[in-house]
Image (tube, rainbow, N blue to C red; front, side):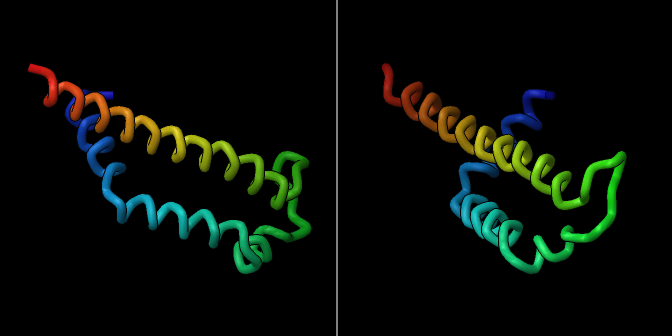
Length: 85
């Protein structure tokens, strides 16, 4: 990933608004309307749609949490670099 793109992404993830948006999206995705959308008798490659929703959604949510931790670590490193003479 190019350095400037990585810097922009990490800066965006430090914003409190993005934390709130992803938290609300996580809550919505695990509530009735979304679960009802994916609770169909449809299979993709032999797997039920609800199963795929959970199997894909879980790693994506872990990836988002990982990106947030990278942003926090990047912010801490930057603050420590500014405090040292």
